[in-house]
Amino acid sequence: MKKVRSIIYKDGKLKLLDQRKLPVVTEFITCSTYEEVGECIREMVVRGAPAIGATAAYGMAIGAMTSSVKDTLTLVKELEHIAEYLCQTRPTAVNLFWAIDRMLNVAKANENLSLEEFKERLLEEAHQIANEDIEINRRIGAHGEKLIDDGDTILTHCNAGALATVDYGTALGVIRAAHEAGKKVHVYADETRPYLQGARLTAWEMVQEEIPVTLITDNMAGYVMKLGRIQKIIVGADRIAANGDTANKIGTYSLAVLAKEHGIPFYVAAPVSTFDFSIKTGDEIPIEERSPREVTHIGDIQIAPEGVKIFNPAFDVTPHEYITAIITEYGVIKNPDAEKIAALQDQIQKE
Ligand code: MRU
Image (cartoon, rainbow, N blue to C red; front, side, top):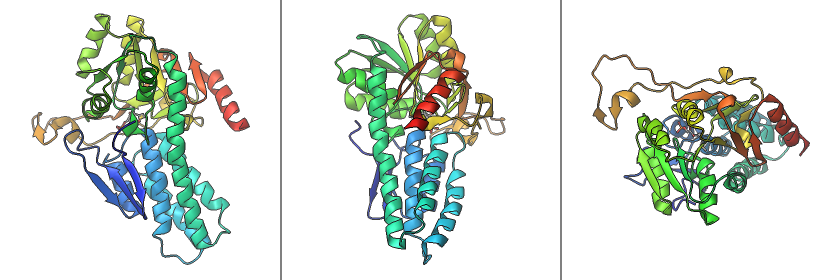
């Protein structure tokens, strides 16, 4: 578990660890309004699909608590607008929409409560989403750890760790669970240009926990695979389509293709809230494009000439054929396809 908790709710305010400044500075931003919460998601103070979801849930609760309307029915209507605002912060990670929908459903189901009780109920739901996330990640870890052998070196991309969730992590959760089970694991972390989540966040988490980690630049991944140094690849996910196609941080697709070429198992670890059962394939996943500045600059240092054209997609989609297995809190789906994911959806609905 990370030593600093990155999403803290206290007395009507949400404190978010500013992940843009890690690992050099540990600083929190305090949000008192839902607009401030939305801004922190958009600007990547907080990032990673499950963390964005939990943060947005608190955004909904804070939106309700700070509202000046005088009756519950009007507040439910206002929450629909707040939901729309929060939905516009980042487009790819479906956990954002999942958490906001869950909060809206709770709001609609409780519109007969008094205003005070209603606000408390929403806050309770946000806490529940946050607490469940930790529990779910532990279950993902317990299932995924069985796929890891003692002595494995595991390559990961971006940060799907405690910082990207409420705690423990998905891809890094599997690695943590293997480490906790006494297996010797070594992590290779891609630096993950342009935003450097691997260098700044994954490396930081692993160093803190004393899990051996080696940092490489993204373009070294093929070479280290060819050298035979990598036994497994594990990444997180931002949205998984009904056939298993998976959106994750830009560069994930290249890793999956390289993994296939080198016969290395390629695993995706994600909670079921990352599945978007409404879309058939990954072609339908909206891919966020971010500011050109993320490519032209590293921090405040300009590394490209003024006037150059920039393309900065934040995510790519890995076709399901490249994925050895998807690890969820329900278990491991080997060779994921539409049929197996429909069976998972059935299982979830029966609960
Ligand atoms: O742009 P980011 O940093 O929000 O992207 C994060 C990722 O791509 C993660 O791999 C994904 O959200 C899974 S986090 C458990």
